[in-house]
Image (tube, rainbow, N blue to C red):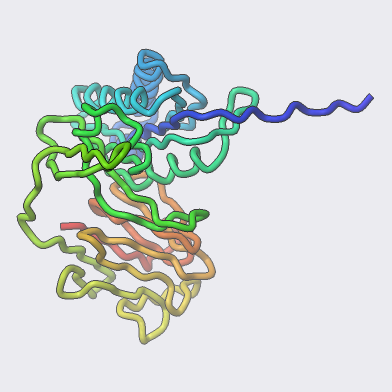
Length: 310
């Protein structure tokens, strides 16, 4: 007799990813045993806070926990508690760990305890966009939060996301009284505006500094884009045989720096000592500092480009 597999259940929920930031550097400095113990302590903390806020841990992947909550306000409360608890942790041999969090609410496909679908993919993408100590979500998720949580949110920018026709409005949920605050207006119901906190004033011009061998380039208001590639016509020539002629482009948009891969072999990106990611015809937000390699991992080539957001 043939066995007919059960159809996956369709449901709704809010998916949250919490990712330990700085773990790669920690392993290099303090060694495997001590680093593993510190990361494991963070992962256990993520799990306990998830349960305390009505959520369920779906899976743990290395130093990252994926959870699902019935409602977005529960995920938001858990995210704020995780950031506060990690921030209060003592350093490990002078190395402070942090956490990057992304969450998004929407339809889910659930089967055998796991969840799948566009909501999961977008939550993971938002986590990649988050900086250390930051909580990132979507505007549509913010609209489903309670009014007191909405006042802790600020709109950042919109960005294209693979698989979506329209750009996604990105927002930050602030969790500390010392967080920089920007006014955010969210239309709720029949046009009722719920306003966020104080309007931030710009204090300096954002600058991205790129360093490759003896060449240094700066991006900002005066120069808003640069092309990296193997061809002599590129703004920054990277003579790696695995690089494409016009490999990737970095643009300054809405006060942020974005890198877009346009290559055959992908752009390898490491941000603030975290795990290396590969962009394949995709876009990513550059933050803090890190390394860009064209066509192959930075561990396999000397033709790396360092970047510094200043």
